[in-house]
Image (cartoon, rainbow, N blue to C red):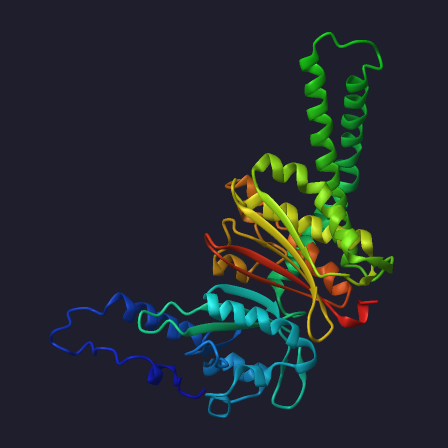
Length: 391
C-alpha cells in the first residue's frame, strides 16, 4: 500500500515532541484514529476536495481497498477529476446530487457506477459525507460499496431473517386481523342493533382504521418479500405521470392538514406519459410522502417535483425540511436491517422496510434512487427513471 498523501495536504500539525505540547489535541487524536481506520476497512474510500463551486471535485487520497476494487494506484488517480471515473451513460443523472451535496455540505447516498482501470463497469453505491476537519471545510469522504455484493454476510443474514418473518406474517397476522376488521365493521354499522353510546361507535371506527393500516403494512411487507424472488413481475402500461402523483397527494392530504404540514407539487408543463407499473410506482411515491410526513414537524413543508432532465431521463423528487438524517444513518439507509434495533426505543422510526421497498421497485423499473440529507435540514429523495420509459 502506498503511503497516504492526505497528510501532505492538510495544515502542518504540531509534533508531540515539542516541549510546549503536553498532549495531542482533539483534532490530532481524531485524525490519527481516522487515518488508521481509513487504510484498514473493507470498503473502498476516497477523499475528495473542491475549493470553489465552479470547479470539479478532485481526488486527494484513496485507501487500499479502493485500489483493490478499482485497480488504480494512488499516484495514478491523485488530483484527478472525480467525474472522469464515473460511468458516463448511467451516472450523469446523479451528478446534480453530488453537486448539491458538495455545495450544501450535506451527506448523500446514490447509485454511482465507476469505470475500473481495466474498463470494467463496477456496480456501486456511493455515500458522500463532509470530512470533519478543523483545518479545511472543502474535503469530503466518498465510500463505495458493491451494490450486489455476495460476500456481505451481515446483509444476507438480515434478508433471511426478514424472509422468514414475512412468511410467518401471512397466516399468523392476517387471520386475526380479518376478524378484527370484520367485527369492527359490524359494530360500526350497528348490524345487530343500536350500540347505545356514540362513543363506542367512534372506538369501533378507530379499531377498524388501525386494523386497515396494519393490514396495509403486512401487504407491503409481503410484497417486499416477493420483490426478492425471480417470479416477481411488473404489470406495465403507459399512464400519465401527473395523474399518478395527484392520486398519491389525495391519499396524504388529510394527514398533512392534520399535521400542519404544507404539501405542494411542481410538475413540468405538459408532463409525458410513463411506461411502468402504475400501482407500484404509486406505492413508492406514497411511501416517500408518508415518510416525509412522519419526520416533518408542524409548520414544515413537503415538495414533490417531477421533471425531465436534459438527457431525457425523468426525475421525481420528494423534499422536506424535517428532522433529516445524520451521515451515519444515511450510510445504512438501504440496508435490510436498517432501524430494526430502534423499534422499541423510538416507535416513530418504523422498521426499515420503506426505503428498501422504494429502492428495489425503482430498480425493477431500470432506475435508481438517490438521497441527500443532514440533521435539521431535511431530506431529499430523488427517483431517476430512464428516458426509455418516457412515452
